[in-house]
Image (cartoon, rainbow, N blue to C red; front, side):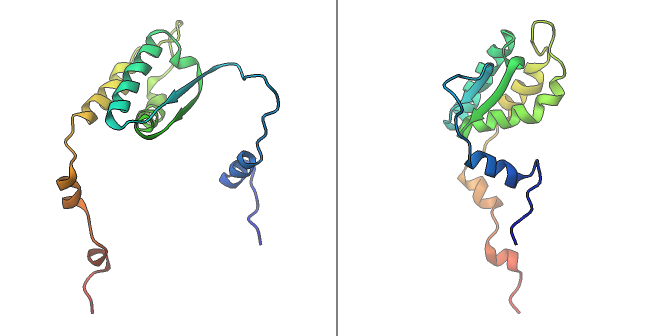
Length: 133
């Protein structure tokens, strides 16, 4: 029996996306942001770019964000931080953007994560299974 599709379910969203057809040659009005990949360098680049967009009052007006790889680190952090930014001022600027969004990304970028750290933290399948018996 197929899953019942609820109006806001992931299944409904996937089905809607799969059947999407561009309905005209018109572009939708508004500001969209695309954040490219490139690891930590991209994450840091986008922190600066978003900071500048905020200074210009553009970030608060953005309606869509798309990202990949390192850009997704920044867009994910922005999404998680959005509510903490509160309302933008009359010019569209978030007064606390640097402390809420940029400073934590800069701190994260200074953390040391290397292969040795990952090996030490990894757990093998045998460890998860427990003692043979």
